[in-house]
Image 1 (cartoon, rainbow, N blue to C red):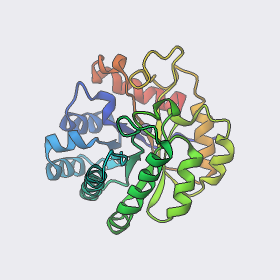
Image 2 (cartoon, rainbow, N blue to C red):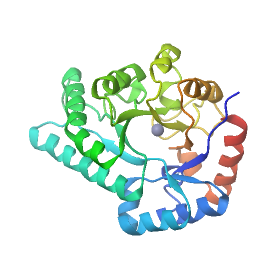
Image 3 (cartoon, rainbow, N blue to C red):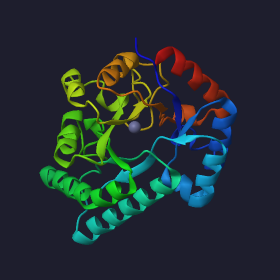
Amino acid sequence: MSAPGPLVLNTVTVRDRWTLAQCIEGCARHGIPGISPWRDKVAELGLTVAARQIRDAGLFVSGLCRGGMFPAADAAGRAAAIEENRRAIEEAQVLGAQCVVIIGGGLPPGSKDLAGARAMLHDGIAAILPEARAAGVTLALEPLHPMTCADRSVLSTLAQALDLCEEFGAGTGIALDVYHVWWDPDLPRQMARASGRIAAFHVCDWLVPTTDLVFDRGMMGDGVIDIPGIRAMAEAAGFTGPCEVELLSRRWWAEDPETVLPLIKRRHAEAC
Ligand code: ZN
């Protein structure tokens, strides 16, 4: 029987309601031991202030969201993306984050060159890997559901992410988000390959019907994903880390976090 792992609040879950300072205070008060902030919220509060407040609240930082997004229309754009990722690694180090979540980025505007965009992703990871290794920050490659391939992520499957991990080795890992991998018929076989490589485990649920491709994620237990089943696969692959709740949802953004956080705690215990 798998255990869900310590609960982490990914701050996007309450992004329309709470600042990072409110998230830090709210996690501490509601007994949520971990936090995963987004870079824009860290910038609003200030990096050193954020790091101090998180430390003072006794929270751990599972990951920093987010880096990647390397494909660009020209060399200047690709270089700018690489520099932005270097800043993300520095921020993650200051925050004591275990990883930076890396998403692929979509096709450059007007492009139909999917293989080219995937090559830019590959080269972007190669460019920032020395900084990540030096900082002790894992680049957690997060495959996103293929429905987002055009505009958000040319990194589409766990197999593709694991191929990159196997090529690059130390300093790379997987951010496994159940929302993005649950449908994959190859998931059990790929999870067997993921041994020792899972750096983050993200949860929410897939609603039927889903009304928005990005902003209609469900609360754990409200949809069709066998979250404990995927968790068990992750544990069989050696993962014992935290369970990070990441709800991009207009429905939940409309609710008061003071009611959302207790519900998350319940569903973490019952449905993860
Ligand atoms: Zn995720």
